[in-house]
Length: 441
Ligand code: DOR
Ligand code: ZN
Image (cartoon, rainbow, N blue to C red; front, top):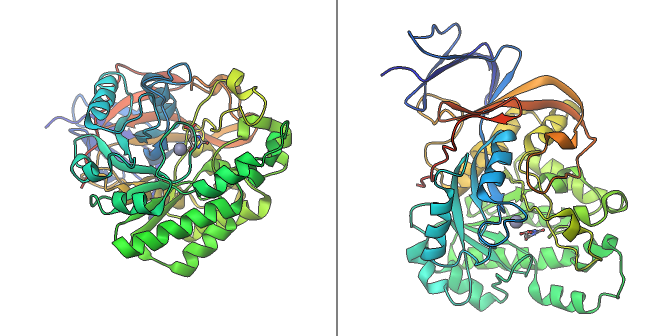
């Protein structure tokens, strides 16, 4: 077989650490790793000297808004932002319009993604009280990322609010279930008590730690009772981390944190950015951020997912609580985590563990993973010399803003390779969109 690409002279980062090695790609997969590999005749060479080479990130939590809310984002613009940020696979959430709650809606998204998505992809089915019994059959459909549950209402109308319905969902099927854990009963009470004209800075008190903690506790109880594996999305508090440590449920429970909960903190972020940093669950005070960072570094939290949730600036300018929750971020996960490496609280190898291996394992993704012979040749080249403040011009999501504008960078993704083909290079997409549906174990 002829070779697709030789990536030469880079410092390859894997879960085992960093080493100087070339990567030969054949048939879209890694065919060989080693120093001073000689390009076979006719094989294109990608010069990676002076660059870090990481496996492409797997972002298992994005909202790309198509169908129905394309003024915020669509599969073309969202997946472009993904590859611009070194993300080569994404799992997309079901709170679109209409929501992805049946096989027809799932098939519709897969059709829309074909020839328009620039990264490999799959789509979550949203659980409801009505479709619970059907999920066991539907979760194995091609291109299905699994089942997502909203225990508390957030953006959109998806909700599985009570334990009886949640238990029916958990007993229907086998794959790990991804869960937004905020307690709907407490949320409803606190929303009703919210004073008119309250500023967005009260958001972490409205959707307080107890909201998150109660739902998380209920979910862990039900996961133990049913034996169903669950994935806790966007942990936001020190208390949830303590609960995870205490319950120590092994592979029954995997978990995620977003860059927003790792890099922003109340009250300062609300003073600086207002509703642009409003999300559910909220960004909380510094002590939570510290606990989340520590849990991520220790592996108590197994994944980073961006929860890329774009809204327009005009929508964000509505008075709280009409301002919508959600922060764009699929492009900035990797650059932010590189600042964590510079600042000494995370290693480059841990980026690979939490952004590639963790999401691949939690979601049972086939063929993707650490750079080794046989895996898909999904790569991102990072230029560690690209420093200076993050500028808005670099952002390609339709949202058009980021709370991280102005952050001092410690490197920037410059070239992204999907299954051996360069799909993004120096601020520009390359070629036609090549994204394909992911497959699952
Ligand atoms: O802040 C959020 N935004 N949290 C969610 O659960 C949904 C998301 C969105 O879709 O905007
Ligand atoms: Zn989300």
